[in-house]
Image (cartoon, rainbow, N blue to C red):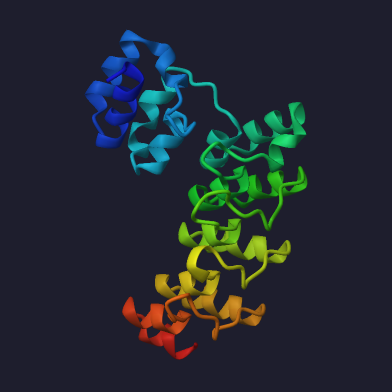
Length: 216
């Protein structure tokens, strides 16, 4: 296994000692990329090991548009977009735009605003099997303020991701009654069903959210 692979494995395992040792031996590893083009910083987000970020930051990583989006770093986003405006609509190697990542990982509407002002597509569909829009990402990440912000900027509340999953289904599964109400008020269709027949009400009931299910 290469040192680069060791680095990504250490992050996934939450092994702070190994990660520190690898970066001490070869600091440039902090800018390595996985086989799917993911940086160590973004990999820490993907694997739920954000407690390792201070170790990565100590090695001075070069943060790209996708790292900056996950971090919700509006200043860094502004700087990158000023230099290269097309980044607002670009896709990562694993199929996400910066808007998908900021919606899922960050709770900073100002960072979302920076991307939208730069021309990010609120209806961008992930170029991978998930086929999510940024609205799906925001609700999956339980960032209801960002979800509302995206709807206010034209996000389709009935967008379908893989197998027909809708934003309303995710909100119902989360048991987020205020967001369910908001989506319904903005045109979400509770009768839409997944390929297997599941509706938003079914997801709410199965997750133990009877009150939410009653709204649907």
